Image (cartoon, rainbow, N blue to C red; front, side):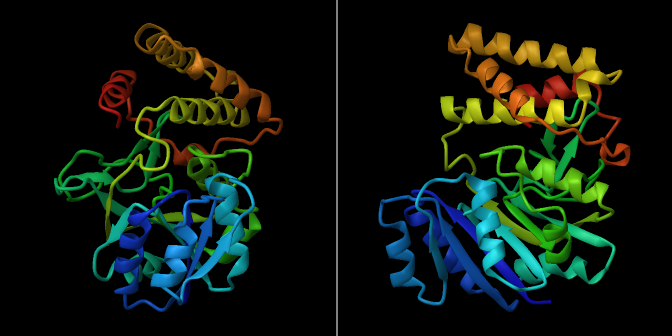
Length: 304
């Protein structure tokens, strides 16, 4: 299966060059579409000079991750649309392993496995969600090994999608500038009948947090927006799990007020709630109901 690899950049500097070096060594046939979100720092020029085969698309403004991916996906024609964060460095054979599960016509999305730099521990092997729609990187912090839990779908850091399935649901929702867009897409793909798969041999080292800074005010606002958006779109606060969801949100906002002396978490959630003007059912089979409230809090404290 041929693949269009879409990489979104924003002031990426040397990290995207390292990403492209590892991608160039892959034996899976592919075309690279690098979509630059108006970096203005020479990233696009550096890529053109170093990797002339890469198709560079420079956007006039920063559209966010999902919208930029949509641009890159529309530019290609391959059967598989592959996403790789610009701070992920692939291991040998990872790209071929990532697209291989799409040979099954029932599979519409594939999760790769990313590791934490210098540790050998898992950064994420796809996404799982609890009954409140809170997302977690599956297996984060664990040694690489057999995967458990319920796989919702892939993380945008390392993912493959069947083009026909991706296009049928309209790709990423451009209202989600960053964070939560992969959760939303996986839910919509499941509603359309596409199944997820996991590719344990599709591995890459993920620096993480490179675009917005770990726990920066911008990251808090964007993640808060995504949370409010998803809660409303999938009707969590109208379900029997509303008390647990509200308690979790209250805790996160309270911690932000006490520790960070900021209301950015709350403002982001309000804005996201207002933006979710449509409603979709939540596919029950996508939820890992074994994640208890206590486990959710432990993962939250450990940023898992």
